[in-house]
Length: 95
View 1 (cartoon, rainbow, N blue to C red):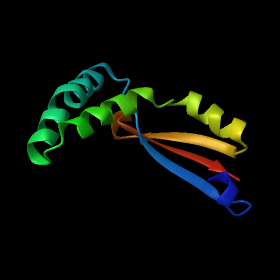
View 2 (view 1 turned 180 degrees about the horizontal axis):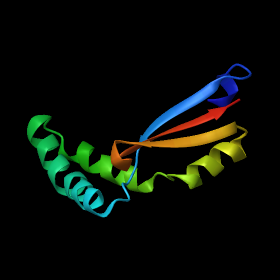
View 3 (view 1 turned 90 degrees about the horizontal axis):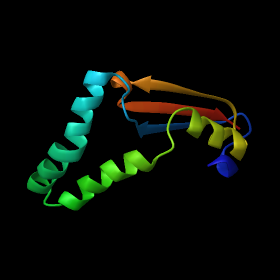
């Protein structure tokens, strides 16, 4: 992404995150591990795709770890903004 941005351009990345609030975290884990795969299998006919989503969320380097990756890649003025009680996060970096 950095290669194709104009000088001064911003990369804005929206990713799922793992909420930190205890009650929200427990409900979120229940949803992503048990409810979403079964609902996805029932509605879309593809349970594996919704199971993969949970694995992808768990594998993503979130928070400060992703900010460090952006900075190491060459982005400047990087920051993050958690949304929806920490269920997702916006990451921004400038070329």
